[in-house]
Length: 269
Length: 326
Image 1 (tube, each protein chain N blue to C red):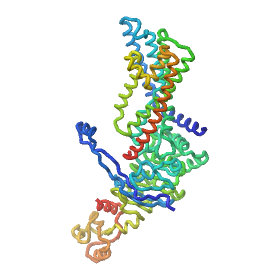
Image 2: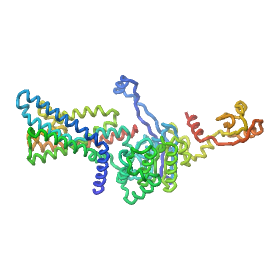
Image 3: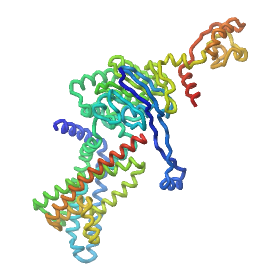
Image 4: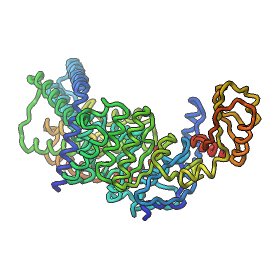
């Protein structure tokens, strides 16, 4: 165990160092994120000003809070694994790992923790700064039991995103053209996370189906919990669904990775 | 004692054919034309502990594929391999700790980090005790002259320096076997020489078994007593370099130095002219006729000052082996 922790700590520290090489890029990405949030707020403000104080049970304040808080969660769970893993497969850097006495999956997860550290901290900070500008419109929830469930949910969502990211990156075993597919998957994920608009605006069948998908738990569900649109019992049920997804995705990843490696070995890059 | 045994190992790659253009791409989506490339077609050999063996062959001969199968990167399609008592296919961690590998065209180090940081990571991977790590590090870094570069990011280094770093990384855990895949590719003559000297010395001092692939003859000539020549996935020669010469070199070279220019026409009668500037002429003569031709040349009325008989350059011999295999 001590060895495991020491190894992980060294991997994370080195990942920070690597990441600091790209500090300007890391910083510039945040500008895009802030703009996205501002655009959504401007859009909703415009829609609400057209009449009616409520849209599907959301007041303007609630909607603004939804966008701000939801984006805070979504930047906290994000990672860059699809791009990283697919590139390592395509460029054959995976070979270098196959000859080392180390698990690639474990190394990559640990490395990613270190790698996203700076980006995530900066994203969360910039989102908090944006929230500060809208203090007059943001609704606050200081209910500790809700916060506890929300934090657990975001943490689970973080793990699910890591597993999903690794899986999407593994597509590179079967095709050289992952980039387009990745971009499309990202859009679908964003949609089903509630990143464009609250999932409760969807037809009932779709919105209840989305409850069984893992995506909503990185945005819509924790944001709805925050707004107390759903209660704690539903939140706990969500955590259960997430736990099932974590187990399921781990199994799928193990299987896919094994198959992918066999393919990698057959073609040899 | 054999540290590597390979028996009838073969590797077939699966690839797809695609007609050019957009239409071809669409067609390939629905109807993939699979074809198989037989990269290695059943080769067998044994390597003893401490040996330094060169794999020689043109591009696509199957050298790298063989090395990849020995190190467990690729699964063989058939046959068996034992390396340091392990089956490379199983890729056990205990096996991986027994060898090091340098792939000349693929860097294993993270190039935004300095060598030292990369090595710290390797220390963790290989579970190297601190004192052993320090000792190995000092030895390798001093032998390769990298002391001043330990804290420089790899990407700021020259190609030669990078290759040296790769070598340090491959040897930091004191492996029994070292696989070197084209370790001198793209390097200038001086850098090539440095790397060769290091490998030679390391093998002599540590008794590490070294398998090296290269298409630079000089690498093999200088380093390896034994050479395995591969072409089209088959071994065409396995033995001592000097046996290769006597077995395959059917011709010898006679070098003539003249006191004044000799017309080409009169030399042609003695053998095939390999090179000539009029005064210094090299002709190629069948091995069996060398003595008589030399005698004839001396007794001729040509203005000859000196005669030298040489073996064919090893490069040429091998080129001919490859060409005749075609």
